[in-house]
Image (cartoon, helix red, strand yellow):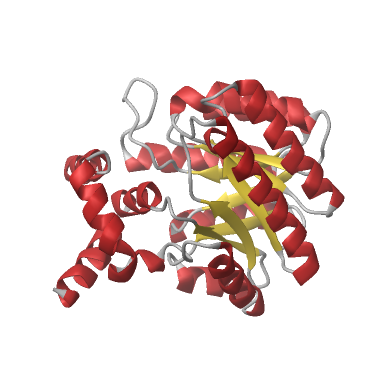
Length: 310
């Protein structure tokens, strides 16, 4: 990442904490272009988007937007909504699963609450023959997330987790869970972390991503390759071919709703399993700001929408 890109990313993430920015974007953002990245604010919006994605051949992962919850009842309600969606997927025969942050289901309230809520979601996924995934958050939450993943993995086969390649520690974290035959999603990372624990240069982040992918694909388990980077995708395809991995069954590609669509469609046409991460919810502002911070092109798209309506 260049100094200019890092400074821009930092400015956007800092703006995410500004009350005036939150009010302005919260009032007009959905109309100005947030719907490119977010299905809508209610479950019906998501289900409509999910059906459309399935009809085009994509699998789907749903995330209800909300994190940093500090109210016990709110955390319990979030877990209940994920469980309801898992039942809905079965009833509507949707190719969809759930992914959520542990701070959404109570980690900031009480780790035991987060574990209990995640276990209830896992049980519902198991009963419905589906899967669920613990999303990864900022670095202070990594240890707690991995601990809860390990505890749940002792009871359920249907659970996955996420590793971020910009963190120095991720290769060791992956090596530590390989005996569990993990279902792991690999991402580059969307938070602004200090240089003492995270790679700053894109080249280093990419190289670590490929190390993680090579190890995961060489081991038992299931790997979700979550990236919009065509160079990384091409190298993953070379890895898979060299290891004689089938196009489906051992790994899949994952991309964010509204981003990288041509690449996703190309992989789908070539016979690979591709899953779109489609979020929804009223608390979409932090998610939008992270998407804008990731790539200047996303910010340009959003600003173009704002000025075209001004």
